[in-house]
Image (tube, rainbow, N blue to C red; front, top):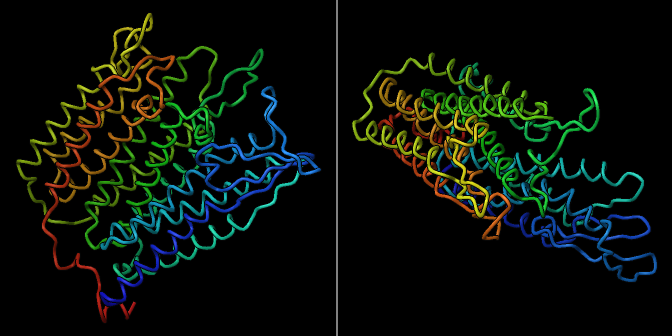
Length: 454
């Protein structure tokens, strides 16, 4: 594919995804029984309640006591619809950018959006049992246009990469870790007892369904962080599957696996220490996926066979500085408290359980310093980028109050700890950028005759 053809393909891909996003303004679902409601796709994202009508076509006002069909429909469909729109918009923007990384990210964004649409469809079938639920034209157009955009993104990916003679084992392990990480998002992470003995009921506020309107607090941001982690692991696997020099994507995938591993271990220890709670299957699946991703990164990095080069001193300095700032982010309160509620930090003296969540930032900060000092330049580049992204994901949920729309919450008020941690993560990412080795001729994307031969 020549440059003109590549530009046309990117424009067509962006147009398909943009039209898919516009379809969220059309009716998505009509559901109900004696009462019925029709929701547009955007209603699931904003949480707006569509009007409910009775059998005679009269508007039914909400009683205020029990949820009506419109409120249940929006609450149950919001998480997957929100993710679908986010990935569609992301794919539309990424499709306009040239390069291997943006092509892979665009392709995966389309695939994740189709997965979210599938979960939306499955959830509709489950929640409308005993009633009716009809998918409307907006939903089907959005799915078809997203599928078309994903197919065009696949074509762009094939145009900027060349297939390898043999599949890489590390890429397959990373892909398996990504799949398990995706599954972990939709499986409960916590179980709370509802009676005597071992009778437990999984709670949904710590995974994907926490994105429902009205409960988009810290649990929702944790869910977003887990989705981002799964997406980045999948992106590393995709790039590794075609990269002529595997050291950087392999190290990035391994670093993200380490981030998921430390997060899962800290969360398991936290949940196990709480009275009346148990560790849900989601955390064990997250742990297995992280181990698989870490193993894939290590296997691919060891087999890269690339010449060892030294990491530039500015990158080492930035990595060390970023690690120190990350540690500071665990000490500075992320919640300043209010009234009789004390402030909270990941290493606060009065919050023993919170300290388990400092395990991941501390471990990743040490890993970033070790990567800058001990790894070769290509491996350090990928490792620092992955570790920086993982650190950002770890600190993101601490900013939930900044997006709550309220000055105060029952937990307190927003502190600086989350921002300090994100600043440290940004420094680690910048160190990875500075550590990037010069581009070799083998890393140039195929063009012209090479692309047509694929």
